[in-house]
Amino acid sequence: MPEPTPTPARRAVSPLDHRLEAVTGHDIDTLWTYRDRGVLDEPHAHLVDRHRELAKAQTGVTFYLRLLNRLSSGEFEVDDALFTRIDRTVDQLQEAATARDSAARHVLAAVEPVAAAAEASVPGAKPLSTDDHAALLAIADGAKLHEHLLTGRLSVTAASGTRILHVKLQRLEDAGLAVRDTTHPMHAGQPVALTDAGRAALLAVRRTPTTPAHRRPPRHSVAELQRKDLVVSYRTGASPEVHPSCRL
Image (tube, rainbow, N blue to C red):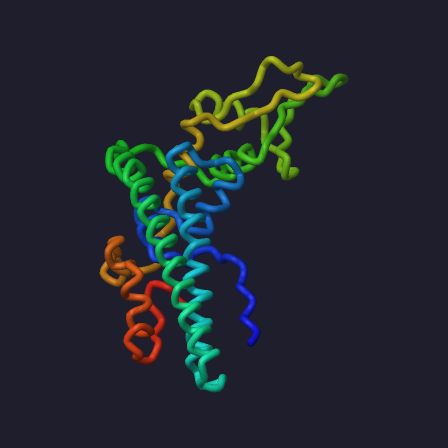
């Protein structure tokens, strides 16, 4: 009998998403985008990498849960072949859940230094303006400061095509948020990059909460994600149920 094709890994499909969002102040899509654009500092980048591993492992759990639901739906004849398929799929689910639990532990370990740094951050720091935030995001993708050979005019062009005023770059440099590579000649273009302070400033721009605090999903411990909660119904012969953390 054919098996369903695994679906591609999606973002925001792990039981620890709310934990990352609470600690960083950003939704999962934003964190993944920042990681791809090189905005994150090392602790945040490490955390997002571990979360991606967890999301991938969660996809495996979800796939085998759906397969078990299909096998027990009454679609197939109840015979020895079906029992063999169910037993094999339960074993595969158990392996996937073990991998998911291991990945969850790695996420929880990676989130602790990020949470500690967030709690130790100095309150009342001056927030970025909208223009500064947009400029830093553009620089994160890569930018160069050019000097026109004839006019001597200075201009900053980001890889995305965004143009940044030279005076804006100077303000960001004075604030320690951006830096130029002065080893390159100006007429050829001096690369502009974010400093660690610039990355931290972007991360400090927290999204506006859309869910009241009292309605935020509770934090799950790793113990609550153990495989016994996922496979016990199949081992005991009860009707299969989807674990709440899988968010099918």
